Image: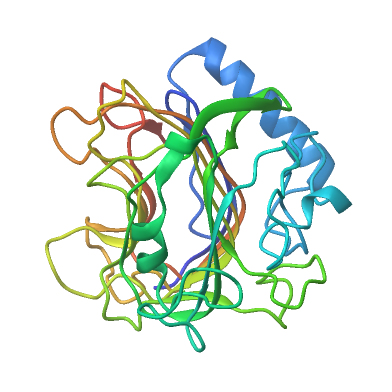
Length: 314
């Protein structure tokens, strides 16, 4: 069985999901007040953008003005701009190229990129210097990533919802510098490919980082058919010293054939929201916007965002 869903997912204390296509699901936040806030955001988003996934050239709001894809939003990951959000702080930008990069001789610049994304994540220094880490990727990568550092704490409001202001970012590299990003721009390539043999693409369980943005790339063919460990595209919740794991934003990502061969298996989940163990903090302010989830196997989203357990879903 294959399923297709174009997903708009928002979460504060629990989650609100709107899916189009077959295999859709919906869920409600825990309380009426939170539900009212998020329903307002969803209504405004649908009024402005319509329902369903739309491949777009630029889904960034780098200058935090509430307008998506403006001219000022198109300089991130262009290989030359040091301060793509224009806040006066040069960001820690690391470039990765699966074909021309080198993890030994590379230094993470556009001229001498690393070869693997994990190398860039390991080299990123985190939020202590006040600058966000931006990992820009080009090519096809067969990796299982473990997140190490979140971004600089802080948020801004857009349409009544909180988004991370200076997050750690993993984004597609605009190699040709035309202000258009993959998957929309087929001249650029940014693909995580599990080759149907790697269980999980992005694992946030060990550290449980927040202030994170993942955008403009493709995650495909993850979630090997058998095994007891969690399998899928993203395991979101993790052990953290923070009181809450918050402000995570995923947009303009195409999830393709995640766990396609793992039918009716409880641990095969495209986006896994289950706690990573005792002491896992609750999730707050999580947005999945304008993502394609195509031909997944068992579960699209599964788990809970609240401290008390699974979200209310129907």
